[in-house]
Image (tube, rainbow, N blue to C red; front, side):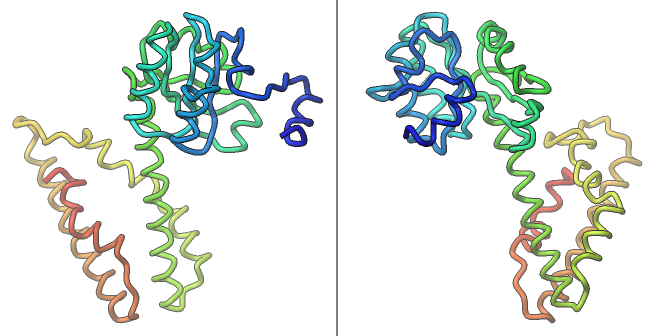
Length: 248
């Protein structure tokens, strides 16, 4: 699409008619497309970048794709001596424009280091999360938090609104009372692994107390929702599984 490319060419970019043509002679390729199908086509399709990249080049998959796609494209690249890394990026349009994205990369350390100078051109930090797939796993985990928070806020807003409470007051209450910090409690408790046998009894008692409070509050929340005639499936799911968050 020449019209779409025109502003970029005016800014100094080189236009190409296919991914393969764009990658010819490059040492680094960053792939930012919509989904798995597009990523596979751009990297390993008939006109994909692997048709022209030389051994030693690095391809970074910035699009959020499945682990299967990451592994498939990495295997295809390996056959030609090209390293394919999963490199999730986070920070949105603002981060992209200011060069302050967070790059979450999975793959061999030597390939990550070859890609690092280019990644740092648009990142505030490059996090090597681990082997192939670890970067995408970290990005998906991060996204899960974001979407879960969005849904939680939606259900809370519905509950407040149907109760006659201004949603702006809900926002104030959430922002000013440490709610987001509270959300990191499972990590502060050591993550998803069971408590070790030598965990102090006082800590276990404290965790059990928090779990009892949560059960009570969530039961009251669901009772209010039932009284108002609204469905809160997210809250219901949390009520059923909150003990897992507390590792009990």
